[in-house]
Amino acid sequence: MKLLKNFKLELQKNKYGRYLLLGSFAFFFIKGLIWLGIFIAVGLGITNSF
Image 1: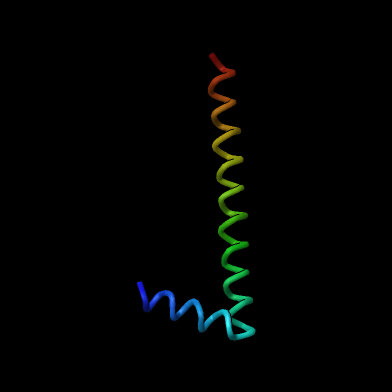
Image 2 (image 1 turned 45 degrees about the vertical axis):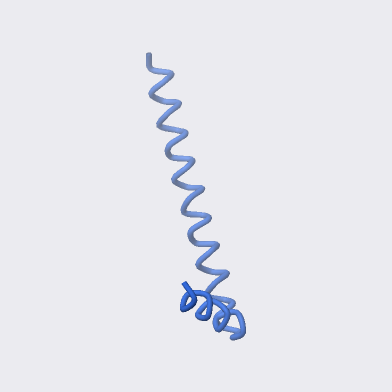
């Protein structure tokens, strides 16, 4: 756990590390929103078919 915390602190100090952290957060956030939209669309499609 301490190793992960140190790694995160080192990334935050570096300019490119901050871009990497922000980019990875944005990527997974958008990916999650897309999957959420797919599940909602499929769920509403299934419930409306009955």
